[in-house]
Image (cartoon, rainbow, N blue to C red; front, side, top):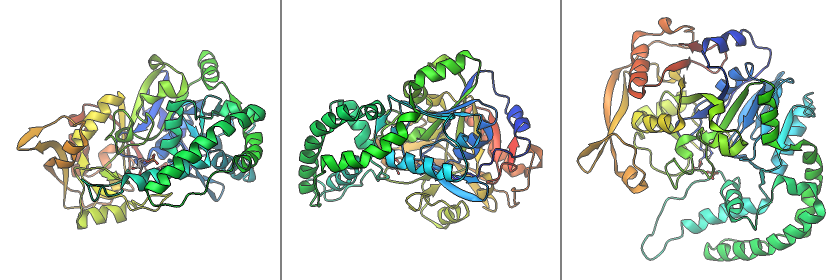
Length: 462
Ligand code: IMP
């Protein structure tokens, strides 16, 4: 799970804040440019007020954020936080993989808090369904992958969130074992499909379990159908042709905010493969994940944490395993919200960021959690990698190469001052401004916003 945000639709001056972001006319995409948990929820929350529709295009219950309704916190993994605005349409696009139990839980929780979701929440009928056997497969696949063999005694697993994301997308690609949301409309047909799919799953999972020395209880297809039926009844009224709805809204002159889950370095095509998630999390996923073509998206806001973090497996060149890394983890509260896993922390990696900003087509960046760096005597930023004595500035495709690179750092002065009360750029300490300017110049993408705390008001517009 990624971001934590508080969200109330009635916060002050939101319109003014959006104006100060200087967005171009048209639609906008928001996505993380690192390995997730950049603080995207706060930016989405802020921006939502200026848009009519919030559409999520990828991922599943592996992401999420906390919203505050009245004085109650709710964890949302699938439903966008725009749901708190009764007049905004919230769309789960065809690129999202949907855990029916999770989404019904979120719907029920929000309804208990007085929100009506009848009019403003729709799910693409082309989205795929995450079923319980996907989660079992996720865990068994991880266990099987790390089994010692003749050549390797130890290997790092992908470190998935265990939410069944990879196996569900794999079934989407396999086609014959996939279930889409539209299948929930016709239970007789679904029954036939599951009677075909479940024996295949049972055979595959039993073999996987045997190889990984794990237990596996075969899935009972009738029990699965009985579990799914009441969930389907709750979800079917929300199903629609997601792309058609979005195009209607575009025709009507409404503005869409496309929300990406996870982040660009976790993108299946452009991330640190294989230590990635199974969808296109970069802004490139907007188009396949919603059915809205590229030219509509005129703004791409890349969300960047002021330092680097990573959770799960895979190399992270600027990782700090020292007291500075620990300090960043504690001050930044860098622990996964779903799994509680401590996040690895490190210096900002500008080589990786240059790559992700380029791939995503970022038109602006929001720098988050700058306050966490206050008090560090000096700040390092990685501007190149050294590989076998060579200095390179491109981001390597090969994970073996990325695991070996040594970061080349530029050292910048730190700022001792607390910045959480700063409300405009000029009131930031000179060294903090110097840090931001270095990042902006290196990446060649304008910083449009700097966040100095979790509250909406703790935002500086540049
Ligand atoms: P999966 O998406 O559960 O398959 O996990 C694949 C990899 O992506 C693992 O390293 C996860 O820790 C990571 N991951 C997935 N979603 C997020 C996220 O929202 N934030 C940070 N890491 C994530």
